[in-house]
Length: 335
Ligand SMILES: NC(=O)c1ccc[n+]([C@@H]2O[C@H](COP(=O)([O-])OP(=O)(O)OC[C@H]3O[C@@H](n4cnc5c(N)ncnc54)[C@H](O)[C@@H]3O)[C@@H](O)[C@H]2O)c1
Image (cartoon, rainbow, N blue to C red; front, side):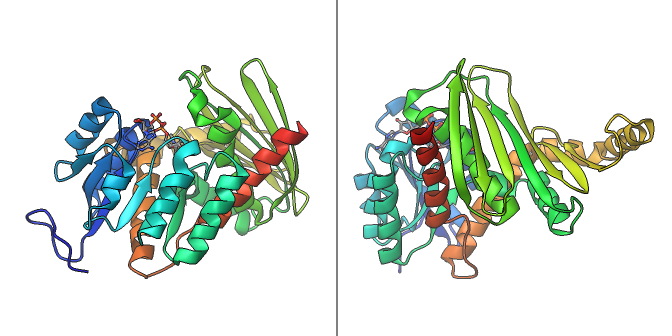
């Protein structure tokens, strides 16, 4: 396809159309896309003029539009990034797929199973790349923990306990903390166990919610989520040969304690302190580059663009988004 590019854009560059210029676009996707080789943000759509202006400042080559329909009329758009609240994902993603575009959808896939089914159907029919933004799959510490689990460092995985809370106020358009935050952990449960949720229960109270579930291999899992609290993002993986504690907001946030040792044992504490000191230069380098979460968003785009070029499939895809959503919505009914 011979598409008009902005001046100086190398041939073969993929044009990205961003729909939704809110917090995740401004804080994560647009800064990462500005540094991404082989892609350029060519159009941004948002009905909110202030958000649109802030986004255009981060993507100087992009044209601003008020609607996704106007954005899809731009022939330079190869990939549509759907970064709007979940209730609008289906309408935008389906329109993009029907217009022959590849799609990246922020999590959760949708806000209802009807919408999720419609997206899955459109994805099957379109034969285009559909990626879902469970970004923590590409977080450095999650990748390291997964390697350890697969190498048998925990023996048999028995349980995963998580906490994901934020300091911001709850925004009802995000669909509640279970859809907004717990969906990330459902995706991580599926990643770590390689199995599906077989039963789930949700309990809400004091502006927090707890989702607990049983995975196909018997692993018992739970996550506590909430807004307007301290910022926490932790996972504890309990196996019969050891425990991994992950703090995803800390560079040195992976701790492995073998079964039989006590986390507070002086030799373990000393080893941890030394490892933290040795990691200081790498931590400073990572911090200067935007930190692990920014690196995970960059990896997400690198992999998505590679899938669009036909080099390798992208995961998580629409079916991963579908299964994570199903677990949460069914749990809400049961809870
Ligand atoms: N992967 C992550 O870690 C992460 C982090 C934050 C948010 N998210 C997800 O990203 C999505 C957006 O979240 P946010 O926090 O940026 O929300 P937000 O409310 O800050 O921004 C949403 C933006 O979309 C615009 N919008 C709404 N409907 C639109 C439409 N039909 N067409 C064009 N623009 C439209 C709004 O005007 C707003 O500017 C949600 O699905 C959320 O769950 C993911």
